[in-house]
Image (cartoon, rainbow, N blue to C red):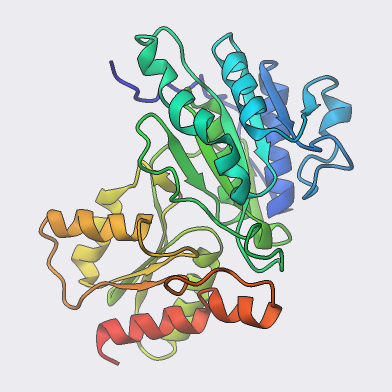
Length: 339
């Protein structure tokens, strides 16, 4: 029995471009999805209190009475409720306040959501979108600063999206909500105030990465906040005569290996920029997959990630030092081209 995605019908309205913050883009995606489909509901801790913890839900409780539902502090419990809602015809969106809280819903995420469709012999779909607030830089300490985008990438039947900009936040969230398989949708806390153009009405393709900047000397692959920093590093490198191609991975599961492979075939070099530990992450998986495909390298791949075996500190100075920086990404790219 296949668990390939069968998406809901796509609307044919002409996309409208507006300037939105990342936070507003998330809100717009939620609003548009709920307006389009009455089976879409939002649930989670404090989702209807003053626009939610990170103010992504402003106006939704008033516009959609009864469809923005606060829950008890019991992630595994309300994730199970979402499963029940999904198999009886609804499309619940579950908000997890911090990525670090995902393990508290571990049984539902690992044993229930991705397996129920298979175990039912294809009789049920599980269109649950789990919105996850992730990332460091906010001075939340080591229990509230994980990105966690690689924690569940080994789960068949699960989709994992990571949004790096206002446009990505909007179209990836719309795609996630339409998907008939469970999706973990990662937002980055540090990106909420960033502003950018959004084509409202667009819906991303599942499993497709995006080349944001073309280059010939080195490929830089990133997610979430690291995409922004990789683009800044590419600007820095361009001033030195190094042409960097920057790819926003966008989907951690499934990974768009053809796009990555085509880029590395052109540049011969790869730098992974990830705000997580490299061990067991999507970056290590990409390098492994390319190696197994016999990808020719001009130099060994590099990974810019969190320092090995260190936890994210509360201290602002130490946290800034620990997170991958523009300078560290640029340095890895220079090293790969022998500069």
